[in-house]
Length: 346
Length: 127
Image 1: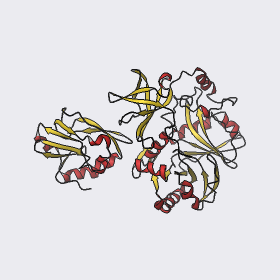
Image 2: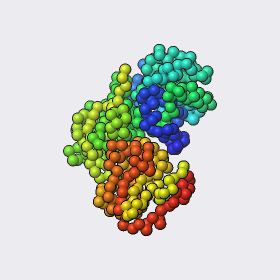
Image 3: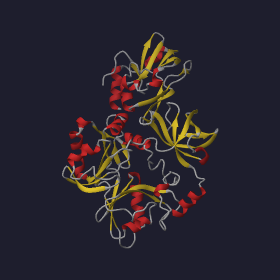
């Protein structure tokens, strides 16, 4: 167990590699109750949120989910989040480590009327089932047609009779569902799913396997690939920036970055050798400093090679570039590859 | 968990098996279990001189890099080449095929700075 944003979180239940394997082959169960859930309501939520985020909120359909980023005036990221448009309210899920900062940010920008906020952090829980067999493992216990639920959509229903928002979203690169329930019901759902699906290989999974899974899937982790200093443009998230929106916090700075195109950027690296690249290790290109590692791990789904993300000067970040990672004073060769490292078979 | 009785142990969770003037060194079952899935082991070069309780390499799990200390002084005479392709042997068999290195001892008397199985067991259980 490790302290994480005020919660005691397991890095692993059995073994990171075993849990990773369960998610890629069958399914894994994650307790993500540390993520902060804010409930937004009022007639003006969508238009207001569109002024604070890079992606579009008002165009979201009923029961749709959408990845979105809150930026500062200078284009750095306050947080990356997911909006869920429910009936009569919105659910906004923010990173645990940014929960207090984001709550203050929303309150500071709240209009006089038309939007109300409710902070459910530490009250409501989130349990995720992720993996190719998620539909069949979860379906018997919910009153929603899971096969008919599209990716990045959600439904309000029940899990083991407990009211839940059931969303086809996740952070592993696999199919799966996130179950938003009242905190008091979470242990019952957690225990029941693990018991009922144990024989089919559903495994409890911790923070360690989640980090490997998301890195392989090329998904940014706030504080690593995306920070107050690393903008969504630099993180390769331009697809989540809607320049057609008339104005939003950070828009001018992000557009300047896009037009100049001279910024350091996040790139994927595959190491030649067996030494893992870790956060903070220097990266060299043509013998000169070119950036640093932001995340790194052994990647079982990428041929068991060591992969990493690095923030690199533009000239070093081209796919195919040969780089050196300095590990304890020794140079180790690596190649830049396009992200993601891993894509599930459709 | 019980430790093998015929080995000596350091507080840094290494084990030592002395055979004449050569010691075989590895990490304990408690160490491998705490580290989790081991993916990389960096050992000193054969021929290098190492000093008791100094940092001589690293042992890396998926999640973290940990320093490796030598429980005895001497000259490294062999490292476990099998770990390069199969570092998980340290997890599977820490007292057997997961051994790390062999050291020709410069001062066999240093064993007095090490612990017996029962004393090490007490430390591991408190950790």
